[in-house]
Amino acid sequence: MESLGTDEVGSRPVSRSVRISEPPFRAVLRAADAPRTVWSAPDEATVVGSDAAATITANGPNRFERVREAAESLFSSGDVHAGTEAARPRLFGGFAFHDDSVSGSPWEQFPGARFVLPRVQVTYADNGTWLTVNAVGPDADSDAVEAELDRHRERLGSLSASGDSGGPPGVVGRRRTTAKDDWRSSVDAAVERIRAGDLQKVVLAQALDVDLADELSVPDVLARLGEAYPDCYRFLVEPDGDDDGPRASFFGATPERLVGLRGRTVETDALAGTTGRGETPAEDEWLATELLEDEKNVHEHELVAETIRDQLAPFASSVNAGTRRVKRLATVQHLWTPITAELAADEHVLSLVEALHPTPAVGGLPPDRALATIRETEPFDRGWYAAPVGWIDAAGYGSFAVALRSAVSRGTAATLFAGVGVVSDSDPDREWDEVQLKYRPILDELERP
Ligand SMILES: C=C(O[C@@H]1C=C(C(=O)O)C=C[C@H]1O)C(=O)O
Image 1 (cartoon, rainbow, N blue to C red):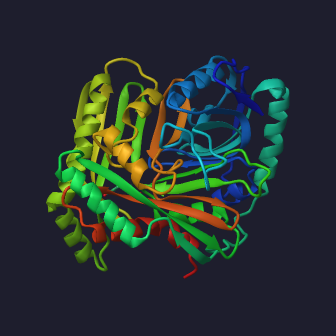
Image 2: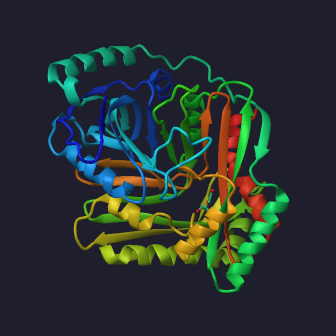
């Protein structure tokens, strides 16, 4: 495996792809070697990556630029026969939420940024399923890569869909990072600062540590999340392991797109403002209508939509916001405004990621004060929670989501994260309930019914 720093010039990647008959997602992921990669987005090909042909890591406030430089160096030349666009070499990974390095449990294995060019990749695209083998460095030899492609094609052809999904591992213990009384005081303090004019909005989160009865099967969880949340962005990122027990996995099914860039067309979402699901279609509709008309939620949402438009403006010749609507998911409903922009000049997607992260949907306003409030208030490190995850390609295009509805797991332990936007008329108890609702997508996959 080639590990690229920022000033090392990557050697020429060799990439070969071939169309294969479709192997079952869960079986492919079960057979994958760590570090494993999953990326699945509405209107995009689903990718399962196994092992790493090259890895890029970076830390600190310049991590976006450093990843970009290392990616450009890696992609600057290549012997690539992708067969189809979806199978072209792409780097998959993400970033830590805060600029300074990630610290403490459960994030010990995670750097400030990490991207992987999978060694073996299965891509489920509209025009069929593709197997790709990538190599970088001393083993980047086209004959060897083609031989490896044949071996993997045979191996994948023999994978069967059988093999029970184990079902959820079961939760036998849980610890909250934030007691209810502390939460009430934190939200009250934030509301006071907002009413005093110090802040406009801050997103406060909680973490939930759970002990599992059995080891978590990430392939099973991701397969089930795909069924329950087809409109969400599913992701799996794995860091390097350490000598200290199992390797960590960070995964989730998030409804929030951070940014997609292709050519000069940018697509993004303002997603903020939340209500639950009803017991019946009529109750669902009633809740959705109430959400669309609720002053507090509309205010919270509009702060996000306006900020995203402002953040894109310096790059764009035009920015267009769609009408505000409701995004209905299995467990919650959100206010949602899709936003598109045309860039005034060519940009790398990571420049847009850096400009947009964190949007006030996960940080707050003004950004610096909100981030300082988050740091002072939250008794845990967000790590990669609520940060950008996605992919970049050789052209500088890419697609990123905001890593919400997510957890980091290690063996029989997992930590879940969820947050809420606090504005001037937030009620601590209602915000508490909203956090619990946002744990549901992951918790439902861990708890035995
Ligand atoms: C912070 C989270 O969600 C964000 C906050 C929302 C809100 O406050 O209404 C809604 C969607 C997300 O932008 C989370 O899921 O952890």
